[in-house]
Image (tube, rainbow, N blue to C red; front, top):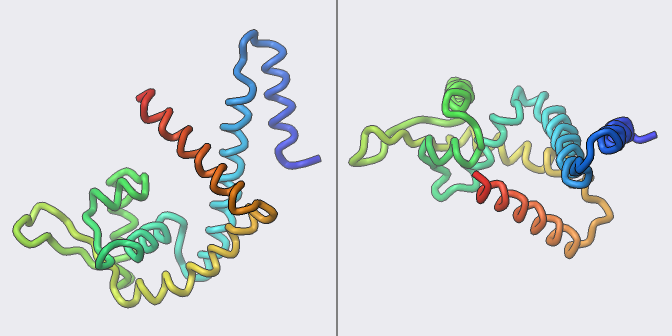
Length: 165
């Protein structure tokens, strides 16, 4: 019995009880939830020895992938899909550890700029391969074409949510 099978059985029970229950879309939502939870657990296990959690890792990775390894706080919040208050807490921790630094944009002191420090770059370069290895295993056996198709399906679902508001 798979870890997901009990959830699937419960969804089938709901489908039998509720006329018109949208089984397939709800099944996909629950599968996605389980997948995301397990991927996050694997990520956090790889990050724990480095005293990092998933959100801190994401902040460092986004900065590492940004032009000049710098981002505004609002762009970073949007890219991380984190609320500003939580992002501030995470950035406070990363700044206290000397991994990032905050500054202001030239000509606009209201705009907070967050920059990856050399120590943060060294850490993300160390943990990125470890985390990637943990995550890639979820897609073992998928061809490049299947992964491209899967990405297209997920992007379409996100677009549908954007349209629905």
